[in-house]
Image (cartoon, rainbow, N blue to C red; front, side, top):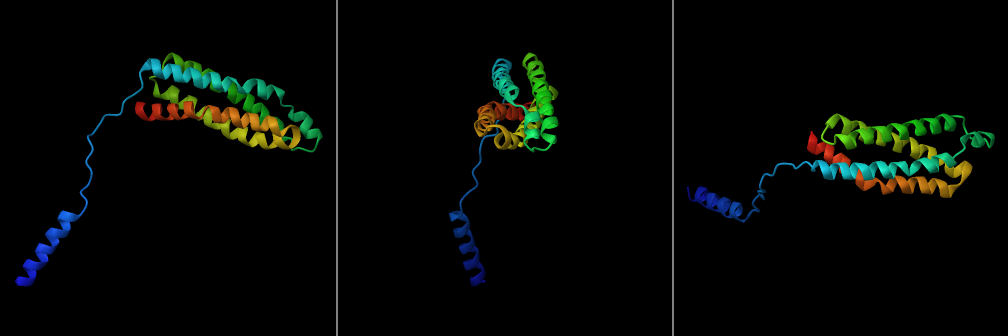
Length: 158
């Protein structure tokens, strides 16, 4: 019996010294105000539009003449289309930033554009001009904070 009391006392001492779980107040996720969301979505769209003049400088048909795969031509055309889709989708989202489907469409179109562009950048660097490839990557990176806002906005809306 004495052993049981000693064990129980030891258990209580160890339990008292163990770190207690931190309890945090439960807060409701807050959705950005419509004005803030529209402002950031406009910045996102404006930043994406900066890619257009850079893409216009690319000439993948000349790359093929230098030995590049023909796939770069179709990839470049796809990037041009995706950029147009992103612009249209973002413009629609600007007018109704509370619609989850529009936010998802804009986000996933941007993600697809980024994947396609990152692949195209290899061709730009190898067959045209490494500095132009770096510029494309830089413009994509500059939109990262707006992209993250959009991602969080989607989570909040959901």
